[in-house]
Image: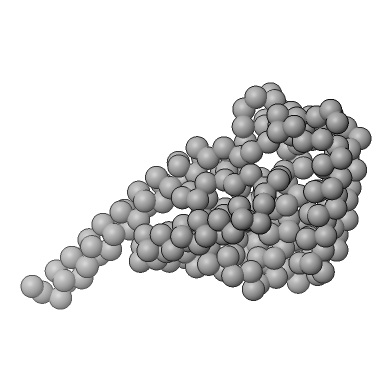
Length: 220
């Protein structure tokens, strides 16, 4: 076999491997779009929000806010991390967290860790950039990763406002429970990793206030 023939054969192998990886990711993306999130609906108050829709929302909003408020962050990296932040849910599924217990939190972490390992095994050879972004987000060492994680907690509130709280009422989520778990516990948790992003904590407060004034919760 000549050198030219060997190079041609190698290119053919590379193209074949790339196509295989593309099909794997395409299947994962379609599966991702089938995962329905809990207590969040479209404006029709019927259609559940999917993981794919949530991810597009975050990937649009996060780099825009980063560029506007935080010049120390790389908006392109923020966008990349936002795109993969829920990628393990392809296998782990969406876990309702409104009333999550410590045991359920441990189980969620274990399922997501197993999903990360499976995605690494499947994609690290053919799509290493995608895997690298996923691992960077999971490690939470970069300020961009922590920013995405913090902002991710705000997005469901936007959807609750859009669907006028119908998803929360279906979960029998009362105003008192909202004050305890979201205004209280979630805000305290956010405060531990938003020290470099105080505006996000302010936005959390504004969104909570808007929800309290604009939607109807399940009766006490």
